[in-house]
Image (cartoon, rainbow, N blue to C red; front, side, top):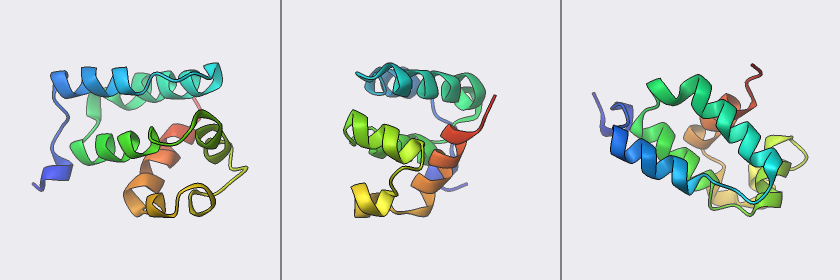
Length: 94
């Protein structure tokens, strides 16, 4: 098993959740739903990709989530498979 495929530990999960707190309620709702649905099975690689998304501004994160902008438009360095995977997970409806 590669490092990115290892399950995220409890301490790392707690830190990630803290880092994911946002200023826009809409982002918080999407992220809360993400953790409810995928938190128990989140891998280190997915957590790293989610952390990279958290470097975006609140407005850019919402625009990318709602597909009003692409990752390439807001931050070309985030236009990667791992980030697209997590973005797809964030967009998964209930």
